[in-house]
Length: 260
Image (cartoon, rainbow, N blue to C red; front, side, top):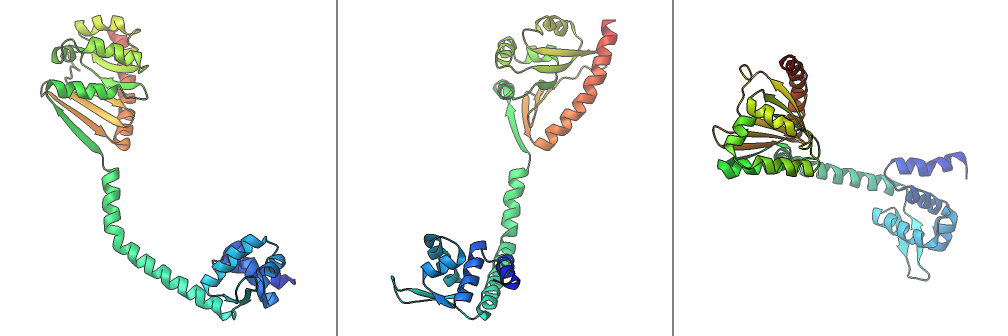
């Protein structure tokens, strides 16, 4: 096989033929006509594979089949059939593109739905418990802005057990907390409840809602409105985590001042 012939399979492959299809087609061009055994031997492939490839080339319209097994023979259609096949493929591709363009609005609608932040609202005492129960699914340490006084008033007798279950699940928490007497008393359990606290002056930073940031979620527990909210969004959670780290650095500085 001369250099030009050696390059033919690679060129046909670049035009959309399968690698072995291109080799078999060129072998058949050289033979002119042959059985699957003869063609497979010429192409350097096994006989079983030869059947599959010749059937594929026949479906493309570049190979003709005549006779029946065991005397079935294959011949190459005129080379112009390659152009006819490629034109047919191009027309089919244009049709698929047109159909895909018509489908775009529906695809965009599904994509927007899947990527839109999910927001869930929970009301009342039971609703507040539900948002805290969700934090127990966290795969990472929770970042929190927490007001211990309001938490324990809002859900009496709930938190001591919750703290044990959270710690038992191996979920740690870092919390920025107004420095109240109740909060400082609770901090004596920090180690066993897997909690690190940065205290901030209660006269300047007495916030009421608790905010927990974990995984791809932001949980808000509003004690005054008896309302729980969970926002599920990787983008929003990531931004809130970064903002929290800025706040944590300042809270640690304030904590040192309070302790001095």
